[in-house]
Length: 252
Image (tube, rainbow, N blue to C red; front, side, top):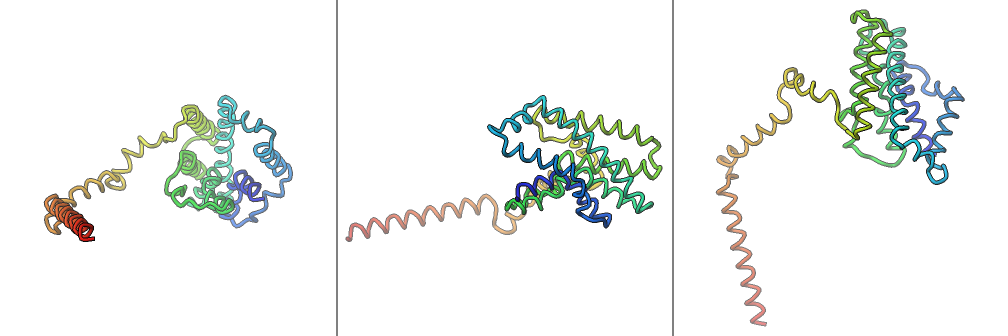
């Protein structure tokens, strides 16, 4: 049962989060019987197909790349639909539209903690918000673009934006899957922008720590000389302990 629930969360997690944000019934999408039956059939074939034939076929790289491309097409459509839906409820709520589009595109990853609890697994280091994957980060940037377009701040038609962003997502995700890469195309851009907007990166903290070491040693006795003295004292103590044990054995 837990396996089936986790599979349903993977399939419909984005709809659940979007309904939660907009104050709609969380189980509304589960009234779509055809979608539930299709998702259940795929779940059954993945886990219980004889000889794992279905899983092996899906994992075959050319077939997998087709499914990856289809998934990104659906992701972009869900982001656009989510922002359009939120715009009907909150005409001037930019942050509501961005949040709704984001969870529509990356709801599965954002619900990973709840899914882990269902499986009895807890991995705090895999927090998607702290360490965003490429689909989660791209969904956030896409939600911002579609929100700007929806509010007439981005002078481009929705069809053109959907086409451009879909081609970007499909090409990037297919390339990353084909090369088995876990990097993000945004890393280079963020490497230039983040130090300008938010100050130094982690390298700056490491540099500060390296400078703090010698100063702390000069004031608090933590330098190389004090370390050498401590090691020498420990060696003398071990030697005296060994000689005392030998004398005890001789006396016995």
